[in-house]
Amino acid sequence: RNRAMTRRQQNQRQYKKQLLLILALGGLANLSSGHTINANEFQVRLKRAKNRPTPSHLHLSSAAHDLRDDADGELKKQAAIATRSTIDQQKFRGGAVIGGDVAERTISAIVMLAVVTLLVQKFGQNGIIALILLSQTVMFHEACKTVSLGDAVRFPNGMKVQQWWWYLTVQLGTSLKHLNLPNINNNVELRAFGMAALSLVLGVVTMAHIGPEYFLPYLSKVASSHFALLFLVVQSSTWILTLQEFGTVWFFFPALLVIVNDTMAYVFGRLIGKNKLIPKLSPKKTKEGFWGAAISTVAVATPLLRYMLGGDDIADLQRHAIAIALYVSIVSPFGGFLASAVKRTYGAKDFGAFIPGHGGAIDRLDCQIVTAPFVYFYLKQYLK
View 1 (cartoon, helix red, strand yellow):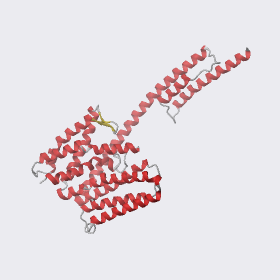
View 2 (cartoon, rainbow, N blue to C red; view 1 turned 135 degrees about the vertical axis):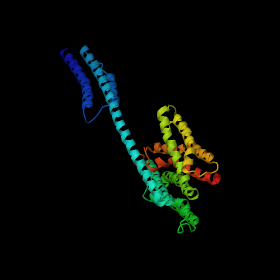
View 3 (cartoon, helix red, strand yellow; view 1 turned 45 degrees about the vertical axis):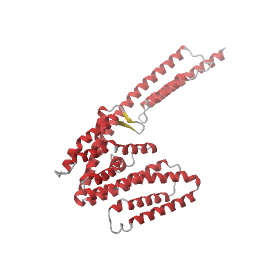
View 4 (cartoon, rainbow, N blue to C red; view 1 turned 90 degrees about the vertical axis):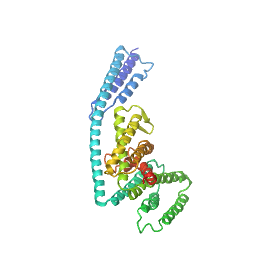
């Protein structure tokens, strides 16, 4: 009997030590400056402590039961403290991040505006065209880099050479062709086709060397690169045509409408946004923000265009302004939705850091790119 009593007491002391150890770990970890235990971790520990099986041969005394109940209550208190601490820290850090982010975005916007103004004043249309070519190069680089995050295999460096060869091929047939450069435009179509034919040969030769197990990843890379070229480079090349045929006003007017639409979508979404527009692609977009931005963009379009034309009267000015504003409000945002889907697919927050505070070039130009071809073809058809 004495041995049985001794064994029972030892088991009770061991169980007490387990409860005290859980409590001590929770308290010490919460007080430690190097690590903060959040509420979820405390709840997990609490659940483990409460659900810890008691051996059949262990009969807890009332003191042990009281100790376990005290430990559970203490853990609950620690969890509540950790929850409040976590919320306070998130609020503080969130406020600091938002404030710093707004300042950084504002500075970047001012710098970009100053650069564009300097290019226009110093070089005219040629300065804007140089900026377009730079943006196209950066956007294609960002797209290739983002898509590479999903690579299941490691491609050789020759893959990058092929991607940039495709880029030069498309540029030769679009943007560079539009520039009417004497040394390039001589048989430019034939040159571009020759480069495309060589791309076909190189692609097949590459597949012959890498083996069947790499066919699917390689063809996926080819498809994503060509889609990026079509979406980013081919569409944005119409900016050059708009500048050359219709002037800088019709280049900047749609761009400003996109900025107005994007800004007002944010404002209305923050003020009255309740219903998510497409939560699976862009959780922060709301229906109220979308339609509030559309109404605002259409309302500002006519006076903005009249101001930018400086009193020059053109036929059907209001009709042209509203038509472009409607496209910017209803169709152009889907360029941003597509960009969000791509980033979500590959687990990227932004496409890059080309513009501090704003992300990559694609993050700022996704809606602008979708607008560019419509504006050119509309003006070509209806502006007399």
